[in-house]
Amino acid sequence: MIYSSFFVHNNKGDFMNVLLTGATSGIGYHLALKLIKKEINISKLDIDIKLIEPGTYKTGFNQIMIDSKNELDSSLFNNTMIKTSKMQSKIFSIIEYKKLNSIVNKMFNAIESKSNKLTYRAPLLQIIVLKLYLLFVK
Image 1 (cartoon, one colour):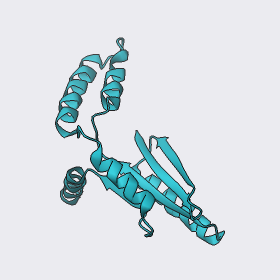
Image 2 (cartoon, rainbow, N blue to C red):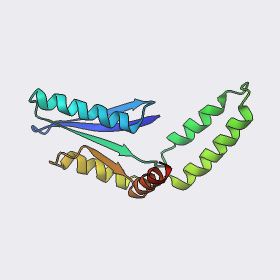
Image 3 (cartoon, rainbow, N blue to C red):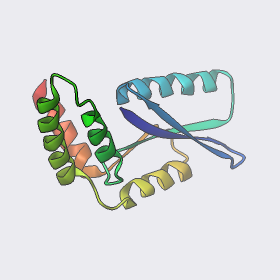
Image 4 (cartoon, one colour):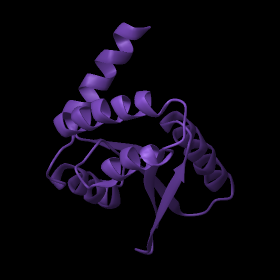
């Protein structure tokens, strides 16, 4: 499940934070926001759109999602699900960032920026690892 947040800002100084949730890819959000941005440009509205894509941070959300999968005690795949959940918990405990500074800074940068940059991502190390992974998987 992807949870992304974007800010809508008009030049009068008004901000609106819009949280997008759903079982779609980050690419889907990115394309949807590009289309929204084009519609705003066509309609001549004075609004900026910024997409914030946070990496994995230690907020407790991932742990709750992993634990909620184990609620199906009668499943034929219960043993596999428990093993998978333990593996996911270990992976998240390694890769989750403990401090939120990097994503908070990206949010402030997105709000204050006058550029046409659409997407802001953090933390940097997770972005680099993801790009390297995508490079070698293809």
